[in-house]
Structure formats: structure tokens, C-alpha cells
Image (cartoon, rainbow, N blue to C red; front, side, top):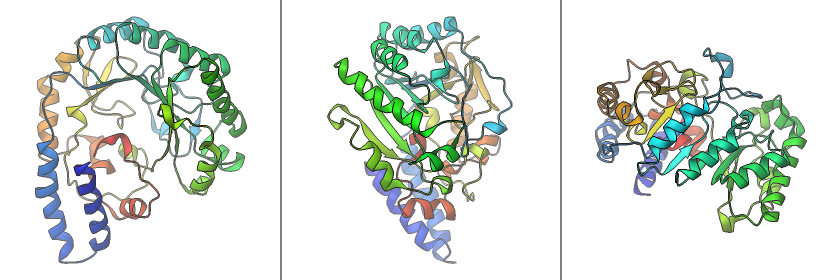
Length: 347
């Protein structure tokens, strides 16, 4: 909470003073040697990640305008169930807060997804989570996810009518996906289940006319806040250089991702974070090493030390990432209230 308040105050001040010839350099200095020092003080070494992202697939059935899938060069596939079980067995021995069954793809394309959820829950995983576009959330899929024990999921729904939705989430259909969501809530009620709780997320942008009010009108009557359902307004980001929605300024703070989260691609490669959608910088391979070995490896510790020194020059995704920088476009978006949710909780 304190960090969030400090960050928001800095963002607003920076937005107002960013062009002042005397004050802006002072702000840069105070953020780098003040706020960044505060951020670094919160980075604590732990023996095992508190959250693990396991990419079950990087296949996707959509061609969303804000997504850099057209730039992805790695092959598409599904994680072998044997490798997945190996990972879950190791994760179950540690105090992991959440296992994220998704990364860069549409997880519901995976026919083994309910089995993966069951395996995780049978091994005592506290919290299973995924993000979907909801287009494949058919009645039988909804029932299978509920019965498998999925704890929570998020639906990206980036339009408020057929035109804005279909032009933003290209390849999907507004009415069909909306009906899927309605039926999910009906099935959950019929099964008398309080899980999975659901977040429905909206991302205001040019293609969907930024109709935030209409989004709330559509979904507010559907959700059950008493069990943890919620609506979320998101914001565009550069996806580590996959897109260029924000002009990049200097790197002014350490990225805390590598102190908490591990991202494992479907083929077993471990990358620094979810922004590395193309797997350009692998820091390990769970086919060859354990999660714990990779997490405590010299290579990953070197990256952490570089991040603390704001040295991102060796990491192409980080050089182009707006999550660790301040820039004019980004501040205008955030201060205006268009994007109130921090992307991926990195900062």
C-alpha cells in the first residue's frame, strides 16, 4: 500500500514537471536514488519463487490488435504432461502462493487443462490461476474447470459491442464470448460453487473507443463480489518491445520480477518474465535442472544484480520495456485514469 501511494505520487508529480528544465533532472535523481533505493530494500532473496507461471501452450485462436503475436518466432506447442507433473511435484514441496497455468497463448486450447488443474490440486497447490479470452469457455469447459478445482481465472474482454470487440480481439466473436461468460456464471451457481472466482478485464484503447462505462454496465450485474469476482481496467504496455505504445525514458527503478516469479515456457525453457514472449533470453531449462537450481543459479543472480544497478543493456526485452521507465505517453495515460491497474504487478 505504501509503495503504491509513493509510486502514484511520483507519477503525478513527474507528469506535471517532466518538461521543466530544472525540476525534471532533480526528479530523475530523486527517483533513481530515492524511490529505487526504497524498491530495492523490498527485494528479499528467497529459496524458491513465490509464484510460478507454467505455459501450457503458446497457441492462440485470436489475433488481438494489442498483442505482438505477429513478432513471435518460436514454435508453438503444448507442455508435455510428464514435464508438467514433474514441475508440480517440486512446487508442492515449497510455500508457493500461486501456480499460473498460462503465459503467452490461449490456455483453453489445451485439452489436458482440467487434468493439469486436478494434478495441481491433488498435490496440494494452494491457488491455481489462468487468463483466457473466454471464446472457448463452452458449457462443458466451464463445468470441467469448476469440477477440476480451478481457484481463479481472468477473462480479457476488450470491447463493448460487436464492432469494437471484433475489431480489437480479431478472430473472436462478441456475442458468442459474452454468451459463454453468462453461461459460466449460471453453471457455477447451479453447481453451488464459490470457485473459480473471476476477474473480467477491459483494456481501453483506440480500437474499442475506450467505452469503460459500457463495460461496467455489461458485466457488473453478472459478477458476485461476495465470493471475490471483480472487474478490472487495464492499460496498454509495450510488451518488452513487441509493441510501442509508450515512448521510453530512462530506466529509473529495479524490476522486482526475479525476486518473486518464475516463468516456464511450454518447452521447459525458463525466461526472466512474461514480457519475453518470444523466449529470447532463457536463464535455464527445467528439462535439465530443477526449479530451485535455476532460481538460485549464478546466471539468475547475475541478472538480479544487474537489475539492482539498473543495468539492462544486456537484456533486449528489458531495454524496450516501459515497466521500469517513465515517459510522457505513459504518464498521460495513467494520470488520466485510462489505465489504473499496474501491468503484471512488476512495479
